[in-house]
Image (cartoon, rainbow, N blue to C red; front, side, top):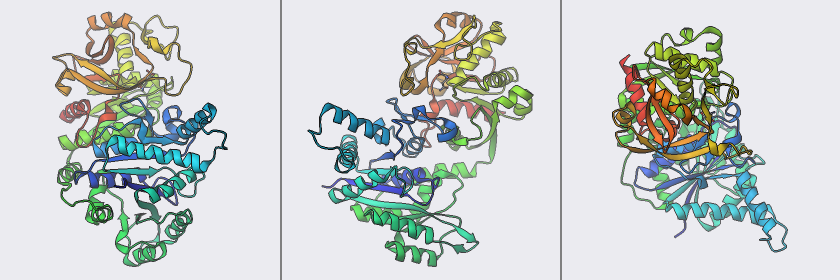
Length: 524
Ligand code: GLN
């Protein structure tokens, strides 16, 4: 039996939502009981995203096994409600490292090492391994970048070869602009598809991002010039919530087309999913949540936090309205100006000194005004700093990340981090066990003693100060061995964790802490 692959390429321009399309297609197959594993190929020469700036690249997502990956992995997991492995992320950096290591070992026996066959063989081997090891029914491969980029050319060649060995369904995502209402232009799609064909790949389906629903003539043109049956030209319209996309594809018979190609069965539906999407769309109650960060201009930098709120909202029937607050603005103008009208405050993860004092002021404002607060990683560390300064009275308290001289480094570097000089992949990364204390809000959220959340940090609550912090009333509600993983206020709702629970939140399984937080915010 040949293995089954769906390959999604993007054309014309970036930002068409290839990750969403890939996730939605996978969801259709999953809803029929098939196991679908996504793979993302990224042509850049970084080994992983860990060293990339969120300003440029958006959020760095972390998997259970600690691999730092592209934010599309967040979309896959949120749609499919599965936890993926680092092996599903194939980057140019990982591939070249592999090839060069092999060459140095002498594995190529005196041959000159080439893109074809050595690199392409490596790619084919890799995707087949993921297929076999994950026991997937179908592997969906998203090719990063756009067709025609130098970076992903060798990957397209590998996939072309793969289609001679296995069963591959090619999908090309394109863009159909309307120069004026009703005037849809298919020429970019035609050219882009010809480019793909010149690489030896004939797409089976064309999905068109569009400004308006494709007219019959536009579909006919795409079908004729791109050499695909007209029913395989699919609309990818604007959707109110991204979780609607599988339903949009479902209506157009996308599953049936793919099922026919692979010989898959037809039973199963998206009813449960549909209900959650309806909940998102029909929620009338809104809660205004401030996210106080420093990358608030690039909303993608906090994508998982935003989505985790949407998930919680779908279950609580609350529409989270996000107010993005730049923490440096709070430093200049005070917290009140930005937070007086919100129902909840989140300080998400972050690195570096800029904006730190603004975040601490935001936490102080939330605590003293009894506004529900959720702190994530850095947001937890700063909750401890705020407490140490304003409740315990250690005015100079800080994290050693921002003040090396302070007498009260209530947040300090993790002992195992002290020796580390390299930047890439060296933080405390991935899922760690967390023990929850009974009778706390954390317990109320999780309802169990042992939970696993994902991490990405170098600093922790300094064990030296834990005793005194607790004595002054700060509740420690979660531990990993002797590392403090969660803290809480007892006077009002405030909870924070060293982990990133947003990375494990899915529409069908919202993160417990976000759910509890939004429920509290909803009471306001
Ligand atoms: N900068 C902090 C640390 O390294 C927090 C990291 C984060 O928020 N992800 O510990």
